[in-house]
Image (cartoon, rainbow, N blue to C red; front, side, top):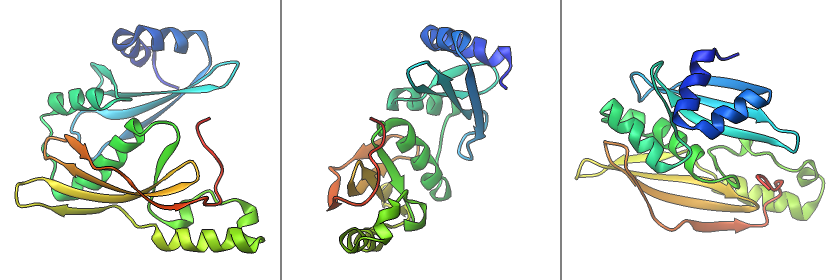
Length: 194
């Protein structure tokens, strides 16, 4: 359970989130971020009567900043004086994407981590789509560019479509995206975020 100080910091940054947390049962998960010296990730699940709501913040013990947008993450980067090296880019990109991609998209780096339908192993057509999708899934790949930035490629799922993502990440954490490429539609996974 998070302390009242954390709830107070979150309420100072976002009064609406503070009100929700104080009015409803909430679960807190804190996680260190290897690319930040001071800030850690805080994921709050507020159990509303209709459905749970997730709130995302970064907290350094003195200040909480909402990170459900690129602008929020860039604010944390500025406070940290972020300077990514090649080994930090993949974890940073995972954090950035998880917080900014929306509710229907998520990164996949291994076919073993995909929530496949159970029927995908019993139905020939679904199994064929699963095998094809698994063959296209790759871990995040980071390549340093000559201008000091990093080219990132990754795979993600958006509802039932497997995507290839291409991004450029600067050392200060700025992220530029190219249009995703659809690799395979109709993969046997459940819809998410609806």
